[in-house]
Structures are given as structure tokens and as C-alpha cells.
Amino acid sequence: MVALRPKICALANWLIPVLFEYWLGVVDVSIQDWGAIGEIVGAMAVILTLIYLTTQICQNTRQLRSEGHQGITNGYADILGQLLADDSLFKTLVRGSRNGKASRLSSNHNVTFSSTNI
Image (tube, rainbow, N blue to C red; front, side, top):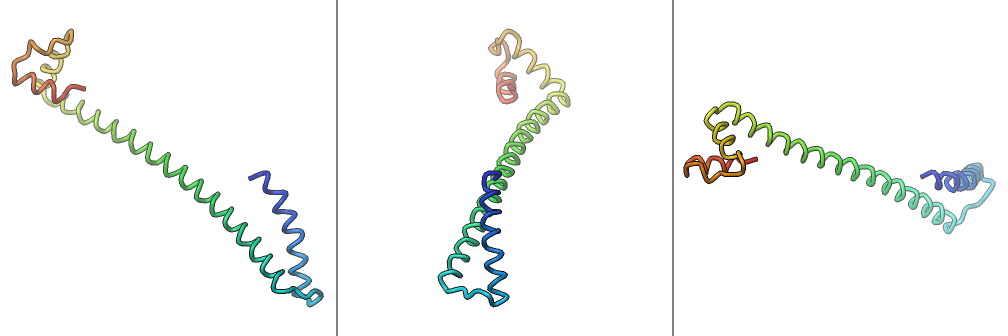
């Protein structure tokens, strides 16, 4: 953006006097001149639009990442809330997690352990 600033200033220094002289009636501007002016203005509008869209995409990406992290955090908080609310569920998870030997659990507790394993 900084590199464009001198070019935009140079363009404005050329364009403003031409338009001012045209409005005063000093200079006759042909249809080709108007076309060139329109093309320059259109190109500037496209560049500004691309800059705007780039910033919007970056903001959207940051927002989506934040929502993803928030979803993961909420999932862990829900599981932790269930573990803290149900004492038998917490004990099953602790017993199943000891030394990685979930085979010592009953089949019912093993299913519970597998479904709540973090």
C-alpha cells in the first residue's frame, strides 16, 4: 500500500488539473480522454476493492479459527462437567486410566470408559 501512494499522488496531480481546466472550459476533453480517466478511476476502484476483500478474508479466517478453538474448549468443558457431576463416571474413568489397563473394567464400565475417554 505504501508503494502505491506516490503513484496515486502523481495520478491525482495530473487528473485534478485536467478536470478543473475542463470545468472551466479551458481545455476540450475528447471521448478518448474521458475513457482514459474512466479506466484509471475503475482500476483504482478495483485495487481498493481487492484490498478491502483481503482484509475481510483475513478477519473471517481469524473468526473461524477462534470459533473452532471455542468449540473444542466447550467440548472439553462439557466432558469435565459430566465427570464432576457423576461420581461413578469419574471413578470409572480413573480406574480405566490407571496404567492403561482398561481390560480390568467390567464390560459395562469398559463401554462407559471408552465413550468418555479424553
